[in-house]
Image (cartoon, rainbow, N blue to C red):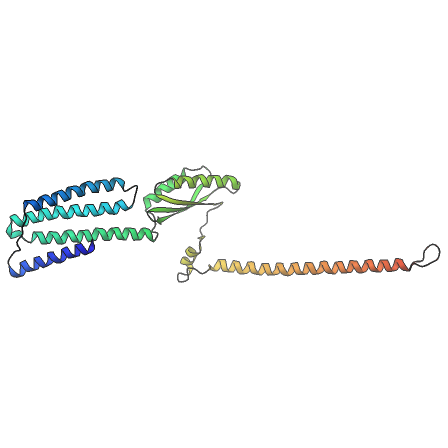
Length: 286
C-alpha cells in the first residue's frame, strides 16, 4: 500500500510539474465507463467496510481490513470528483493531481497511525485512564473489608494484563483472603478487554516499590537488573546471621560431644571404684 501511494504521488507530481512548466494541461479522458467502474468499486468497498466493522470485535485483523476498505472508498470517491472537475473545467486541470497527492498523503498518515498503535500494544504500553478508572470502580465495590493499593494495566497484544494490589485486614485468615482475591480475579478476567489478571493481597499499603526494576529506576537508572541496595544489605545481613547460626550449631554439637565423653568417663570411673570394693566374703571383685 505504501509503494502504491508513493507511486501515485510521483505520477501526480510529475503531471503537475509538466503542466506548470509547459503551460499545457494534461489531457484527461474521463468516460462514463470509467465513472461507472469507480462507482461500483466504491459501492462494493462500502459493503465490505461495513462487514469488517461488524466483525472487528470477533477478530482484530478485521480492523486492518476495514481501514484498507475505507481508504479505497476515499481514493475512489476523490478520483471521481477531481477527475470530473478537471475534465469539465479545463483551467482547473491541477485539481486531479493535487487530489491524488492529498489522498495519498492521508493514506500514508492513516497507516502510519495504525502501525504506531500496534507497536505501542506490542511493547506493553499502559492502559488508558478511563479503563483504569473502570477497574478502580470494580475493585471499590468488590468487598467491604478490601481497599485498593495499586493498579497496573498494560497491553498484551490487543488486550490488557491487569495487576491489582489490594489490602485486607491482618486478622483475616489465608483462606478468606484467598477467596476474596480469587473472586476479584475472575471478575477482572470476565471483562472483554482483559487477557489475564493478577491480584496480590497484602495486609498494609506500601510506598516502597516491590519489584526490582521499579526500585532501580528510582535509585540506579543505569543498572535496572541489579539487586536493590536495601535488598543487597538485607541479603548481607541474612548471610551474616546464617554464618553465626552455623557456628553456634557447631559449638552446640561440640559441647554435646564433650558432655557425652565426660559422662562416659564418669561411668567408667564409677565402675572401676565399684570393682575395687571387697564383697561380703572378704574377696575382691576381679
